[in-house]
Length: 499
Image 1 (tube, rainbow, N blue to C red):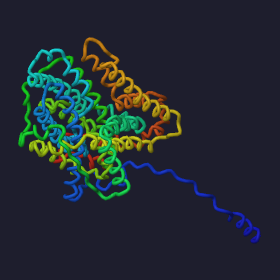
Image 2 (image 1 turned 30 degrees about the vertical axis):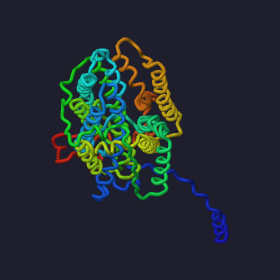
Image 3 (image 1 turned 60 degrees about the horizontal axis):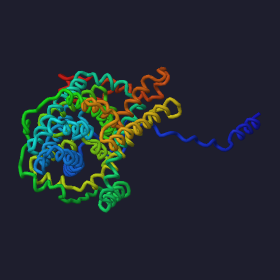
Image 4 (image 1 turned 90 degrees about the vertical axis):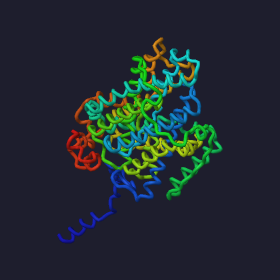
């Protein structure tokens, strides 16, 4: 019997069963970040990184006024003043957002989303009778200011009332993927096409960036400057921007409604950008109440933009969100230092113009990396979803495809005809319809959000959507880490509680 038992044991000692490969475990917080949201680097490194954020946000800050101010009738002097104002307001709004909004390391700067509506105001017939270009510039600027002031109320009301919190609570990792991904990937036209405008500068810069950031990790700084934009000569040595510097704003109901729609599109895009920033800051998923609070302060940012006259609204800087990933530093302190640089160099005009004269192809080369990182940040939420179900495949594939295809049609139609597919006698009505469908992130996010919350509403699919991973962050106090990352300073949570 003993021998038989031994033989049985010997039979069980055959070749071991090969170990099954295990999937990578999902991570609620982004690993491998050198400095997370609450951990500042040493001061010398923090100052250098803050200066990098300042340099990166200059791209949008310079490109938008450079494109719009000449159409308004302004020259180099007006352009330099608008850039200074936009830079000053960006620094102020970034500080407000990092202190009292989401408290994330998000840079709040100019936004391309507001450009089509702004161009419609510039082309309004009532300004064509002014023969003095400078007076025409001022009249158009005051009209843009009035529209931004009215449009700011949308985000202020949705944010501070908590209405956007209720919308965000229905967001799942599955519906967040198309939104966040196309916040980054949707800006592809600002990447290599900009590099190719001066390929002998842009392409080597792009290759150097990839080599240094991926193959040669130590931090290296590159610089290249040329003053072809006329900013250096036109910028004053010292100038402090102030509200109503162009005169009292003027108001037009139709233009205000059109700008309000642009503000709503920017709100959706910024929601995706905030989610990406929270990921690369190695914070926990942003609670809906905190997101809504940040939206309210972004509305305040648009109001300040209207009061100062920046020719543009405000939203989360996508390129700076990508810089968080490139440097692996998500520290709030670094972004607050960058806000100090923005304010400082906006007042010292000549020095600010010096850095603002970086060639556009170099900025475009940076965009190729930053926007790619933000798009990949959106794809990272797939780790919480069940990719084996056809429901998941359909929502992902259809929303991303439509997010690319619909804006392609609207933008191509506009480029060929000079106006959008919706073309009536009321320019403001055209903008209300055309502008949302020109945004890749808005279209993809809306389609994914709608399908995810209406298609097969079965309780068993919560895990397929990844919703169970975000349940603990649905309310502010459910997970103690939310207070660690998103608490307001100076014990203000006692007076402004998040729910």
